[in-house]
Image 1 (cartoon, rainbow over the protein chains, first blue to last red):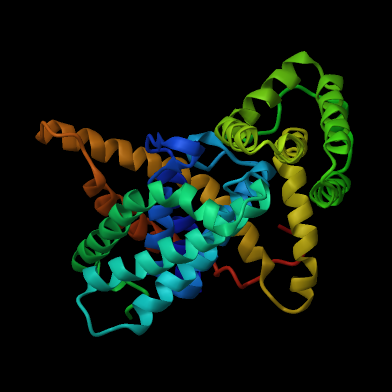
Image 2: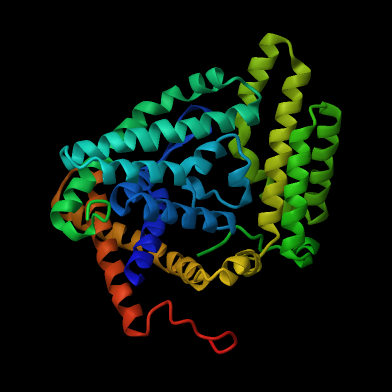
Length: 181
Length: 207
């Protein structure tokens, strides 16, 4: 119990710390940060349930008014901006990533985690993000999808890195991969 | 850690946080229900008046928080300028500005302690169902303490990387950062257990 709780809190803090790594803001103000990699890592390492809880804890702190999002953003405004769909999709993204890593045991860890991160951290997260944008900007889903395609290559890199990082952690701290007990 | 609450004391700081959050929810829904640019422009003017009533320094700070919207405003201006649907475009742009400005206003005028009090109140029904909500409050405090610690760890790792390599420290630094974080999590868990664990609830008023 204590161990689960401290790990969940530590991963919420890790997502916050990754947001402080200097980021690149490409077109349309969607910042490319290491933060969404933190979401993938939370799911891949903690597993579906604990990963989603870590992300929810992080979101609660942002809602309380802490500037933990990349670029020092935060507060309730993080939930009503045109890009908020991505943010709202974070816990689901972490859950799906974790679920795939938990269930799919046959492949090599790095590859499994990379694919899980692509499905959870890209497919699921973009689904939420695109719906959110289409509500805020009153554009069709296809039009919004076209707007965000520029960010997919960066996120694929993050998914690959998540795979490599998880594999490295599995070697140095075998007991830490809670998604593969 | 510094919260986004404005250091400038305003009249809005004295309104209970719950009232502000309820009003924010209702008004945000209302903003999304109307498509008339006139109504939305009035709403934005009213929000601007709210900011100005709190002083120029406060309003300037609030304006800076809206800067993130400019790419979207530009996009809407181009799109609707080209398609000739100026009215629809104005409604979308005004709504984006109004919704974000209003949410930021509540964040800027509500202290972290007041927000945590609202969260505790919202969690009260869960407590009655037997869920350990103290765990959530403890976890929030832990994240606040751990975040600067992790950043410090990251900076120290980057320094030792630079001492050994000419290349910039890249993503590789996340591996030792996460490993250290996991070790720290285990140490804290052991310390908590040694002190009676988190489920050993202390009765109200004695902690």
